[in-house]
Length: 252
Image (cartoon, rainbow, N blue to C red; front, side):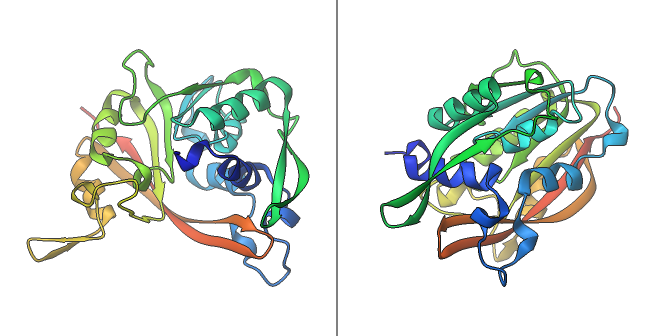
């Protein structure tokens, strides 16, 4: 079974996107820099001053929708797309009801009930979700002022195919944000398709170098480290730092 269709991953991502600080990281001596990731992400990576009134945003690989909802604070319309039907069902329930119940893993099969909630200040009517593959983005989505790929590249079977669809999605003057901790695994991406973390022709290749090569129609405007924490259970956590690069289309 696809791990992104399991109850365990759904619980993990609902906590990651919407969990209270005490649930995401209940230890005072843990790294607090990884908390409240979706809100920090949008604040760190999106230049609100460049957004037109009623801006459109696309969140590719949206998971359960944390960043999608945060984008609705600053954009008039936001579309979240993810391949996981389980994640999209949860995101749609959050959009409809403003909350969704789930079980937080404590130890083994022991859980405690929790409720993921959307900030009432967010206009949920601005958001919609759909199931889709980021390597097969449908052509009738239109164009966007903001396109976000958060922690997605290293979970795609063909990252380059996704990148090559981006020029038709980002409007002139728009913002493209691509972030990842670059955890390449053959479980998700054949090694022949890794963007970086490889040696080719005797040369070490990083993802940042590959992005510059694969996005010739974009100009890099910013680069930000965005820490995040994912809880596995009450005594095990993943702390990582996404490399967020911000791009804008080059003038024709």
